[in-house]
Image (cartoon, rainbow, N blue to C red; front, top):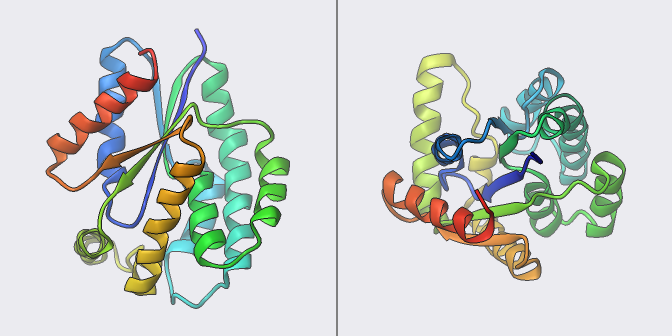
Length: 216
């Protein structure tokens, strides 16, 4: 049985990391073996690069450097985790993928989109998600959620993974618009899910969206 590749996208605090395991549990209840993963990260080398990207001062990298770091991590992630799981017939649920690079570094960061497309073709080839769920939330609400999460992590483990969260409200408003434009440009692949609500409500919306698009 062929595996499926589902990605969860959206701004900071939209609930991707909360909803990914809930979606995986739903897919497992339908009889599928599921690999849950994330970006940046998802493989040993990629996790090491993640530390460079999500911690530290917001200005430690420019958008072009971020693009290259994300794609270095993505190559390791694809090679070590995503492609092997799909080859085994597993369903892959990934918290962020290439749309995040296009939104953050392309639309908002100003990196040439053709340049990003060329790198993507070299790194990922023709691999495209079967379904991308864009969790949409007003940035004010998302940042409040993300900042509360980062404070909790910081207290538990030290430095928080909050570099992107500290890039300012205007950045995040532009980011939301970017994700919505990506969804509008590829409606056959992308579905926008209202992420404003409690965890169970949003989980039900995601379940409905997946059942609407994929035979599970």
